[in-house]
Image (cartoon, rainbow, N blue to C red):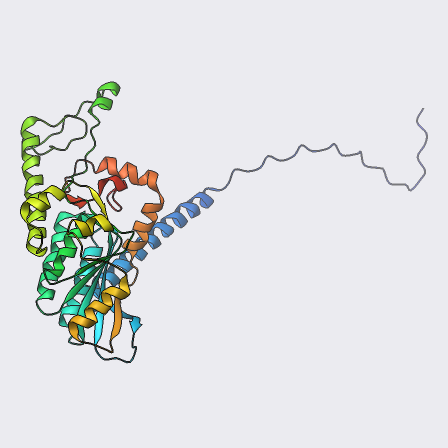
Length: 347
């Protein structure tokens, strides 16, 4: 028998059973749309930033380089201008070097130019463009060359812009020479055969894919490229003969084996005149111009988007080598020191 409940006491509710946890709802669709829109906005921002940097660089070219005081008398009116050629000779740096040369040519306060070279060389066309502008400059103002760490191949080619009257200085540890031409090319035909790759491009002419890395060069293709290389090679030799008064054609050809020369050997072979430093080259220019008080200035250019991208490219060597493979069929004749590795900006 149930015990009687006291009168007036409300009935007690039954205890609640524990409820199972609610499953987490899937993220709403709107959050994914927001993420996609954010990514698109970020990509758009980066593209606009790139276009703005290119816009600034394009419209700033007319102003020419800026002058930076280097040494000498800061109050002097007459100037010696340093035109620096550093790194691989290639766009966009070629255009900057040319603008510096043009600025030195038209500035009446610039009485002489120190051509400072620290380069392993670069593209054939770019090297000759710089040389051509230097020839015009030397008709108005004396040029003295100062070689730093390296002035090889195209770096030596542009040094010839100083002419027969221009004196070439090199530091005791400078490497120069490497006189010759190279067209970088990969031969991956053996690898292609192993993995079963067949190169079958659609082309309009027999020689359109002459540097295809997945097959060997045919005899006719090799004959054509040998002719192209020899023409650039002969031009290089003749440029040296024209501008080094103590060297004739046979002597230069004997030196033009692609070999690197130390400063001591280069001086013995007649490739340079003096072993010295920047101050020695400047002293020579003062002597040539008869200047006592002079302001030595250096032409500089603001860093552009291309500089940033190329610096990043040099830091990522793996990506550079992938790009080299993709561009290996593009012919580029170069006055370049090939054993330095991949060409910056061309990998």
